[in-house]
Amino acid sequence: MHITRLRLLGFKSFVEPADLVIQPGLTGVVGPNGCGKSNLLEALRWVMGETSHKSMRAAAMDDVIFSGTTTRPARNAAEVTLFLDNSARKAPTEFNDRDVIEITRRIEREAGSAYRINGTEARARDVKLLFEDAATGARSPALVRQGQIGEIVNAKPENRRRILEDAAGVAGLHSRRHEAELRLKGAETNLARLRDSMGALSSQMESLKRQARQAKRYKELSTEIRQLEALFVHVAWLQSHTLVEQEETGLRACLLELAQATSAETAALAAETVHAASIEPLRQEEAVRAAILARLRHQIETFEAEAARQADRARDLKSRAEQSARDIAREEDLIEEAVTTLARLQTEWDGLTTSDDTEDEADASARAALASAEAAQRAAEARLTALTNRAAEGRAQRKALEAGLTERREVIAKLTRQLQAIGADMAAVTARAPDALTLSELQAKGQQIAARLVEIETDAVVSS
Image 1: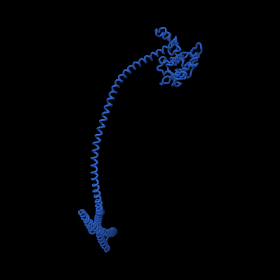
Image 2: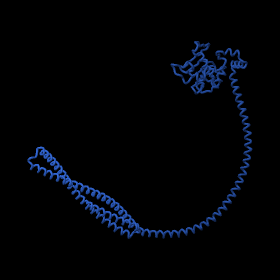
Image 3: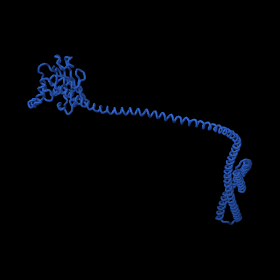
Image 4: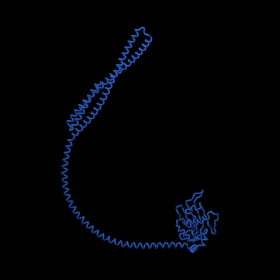
């Protein structure tokens, strides 16, 4: 069983799929520094199960993934596949059914590595044992790296022994032996824990036996308690039965009293019906009185508002009449003054006409005085005309006021008649209502309003 091909994809500098074919004989890789020769050896060790990132010359295992360049983006996964020739059937039994064994290791960023052998998921330990049985592996001295010859020469006896064991092909046996020893130690640990568990179970069994004895005693005491409780319940039932008979006797007496009370209630309901029938007319009378009282209050409010309006109207008419009288007196004085002036001017005109020796200057002044007198006369006539018109308007307004006063008198008379009718209704209600004092007060207030209306009417007549 030997290596025939190594396939790399996204591993370090191998961003594109690359195959390294290893033919029988000597296969060499030649190139300048930095071309990736060491990456091939590291890929071979990595696919064989290397777990140390330092051996991969990386700060972390994820650094084996292609990290990208200025022209190419980074990859998120790396994969290395190793092909082994198994035509001699020297592989372990579980992998010895094929001529070619394909071992693949794949890593993704921040997700860890995964192994596959012939396309089937496998453990890292399975891959390690496979290569150890073939006297090789990730840290086998068969893979000579830089500086390893010096390490072998200066190695300690233990390290040389490991090298010889790897060369003899017994490294896999030692790994299995170490695994078996670990399992034996685990089995011994489990046995010790089992002994401890058995001791704990023994103590628990003793405790359970004590609990069983206590449970048996509890069961016996519970039986006695249930019997005593049954006896107590029976005695209580007898007492309750006697009490129930006594309560039934009292219940019958109460039912008899209830029947008597029901009969009394029926009689009381009948009496209530009769009284309700007699109360209904009183309620109707009360409703009538309430309606009359509401109408009376409304009419009183109307009378008060009307009285206030009549008083305002009377004051207005009185002030206008006084103003008209003052205007007429003033115009009469003006008319008398104009008549006196006209008489004086006429006298002067007559004197000027009879005098033939009057000078031209006196004639001119007389003419001017005449023109002034004529102008004053025209003004006086105009004022007289205005006063005549105002007097006519005053007379027309007075007639209108007299007509309004007559109408108001008719309204007052109508209201007086209504008040008398209300007074009659109030007297009728007073005769039937118990609250005679309140209705009498309302009647007195209505009479006061009527007297106030008469006073307003008198004032309006005097003002006219």
